[in-house]
Image (cartoon, rainbow, N blue to C red; front, side, top):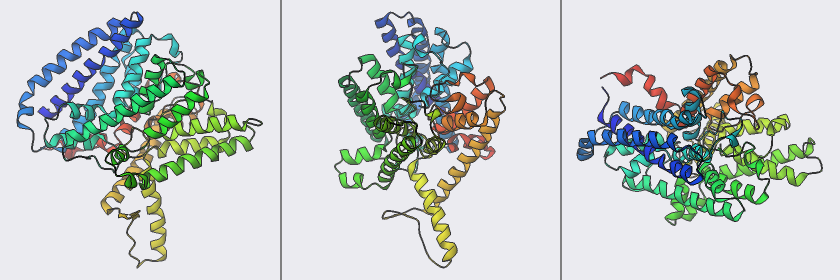
Length: 488
């Protein structure tokens, strides 16, 4: 039996999507691109259905649940993202962008999960409103549909905290304020502030208003959708690239750090161990890749251009944004391997970035060194520390478990995708890495200048699942496969 919580959250998501479709409808009317019907009819249907669902579960809002089962939480969150992908792809179908529900769902799932993998080979061929909606899905997905719903509908009692905890990524705090609704609103406020600041910065850098808005949607969400087939390389502007580098890097930082800055706990923010490590990895990788490109002759005689492309590409990959200015598929093997490793590291926990997250990478490496030390000193008592804090054993085991599950999922999905004869091992493996870590572009047949059009239907289905698993960090979805979860 489907609980009222599941129905209410699903209805809230459907209503939110219907309201969101009014934005591209306005863009279509403004540009006169003829796509208005692709947004108007789905919007009307979703608003009606979502509103009816919320009205039918109004009793839940009145009594505020004191007990929420794990099954309801995991099912609500997973279903919210699946519904978003299925319904978000409807405008693509109605407008003729794609001819099958699988393709429209792939593109919408890529948007809402902020992956940035696309099936479009000629992006400029689409109408401005379709491209606006495509980027808007990333902006909505970046903050999280569930978080938005909790922020605007704080009527779920303890259920709101559980939903936010299941959706926000990483072993980080999910509550900045005593009330969970205020926490969700704080997240949305930070998100809006970053978005507004980037729009202004891109306008000052010389980009037009429409392009500034849609690129902001994709940058702050670390999504990577661009209205240009050549992505950011189309503009060939140092100023535009500099702005995007800054905001991609900022978007890979945990929102908890921004809240610390807002609450004037600046020292705690600056000394955050994950933030410091993230910046060191980012800067170290930029100079390492730059050195390889110059020494191996990829940018012989052009060291400044090499640094520019290395800085943009490394920042884009580690934050899992996926914007492109250079065809890194033609770079030296060591540089490409560095980019693949950065895909798995990702940004900070509690940010919009994907990947395993920096804090987990720290814990994994510290665990390895700690176990080696214990082999040499078996009697030593060595708690795992991050700065002045001791990492609880339960957290360490959870991180190691997730890391193992991530690698197993990557291996299994790579095997399934590689069944397709048209894809070699590099293309298959990086396609999975790019979707599981919500990066976007892979290498080989799905490289920086290519789309995922070459992947067959079965592969697209597998990669769509990888995007969902990566966005919800595996276990929220895997829990639904456990028979114990469904026992009364």
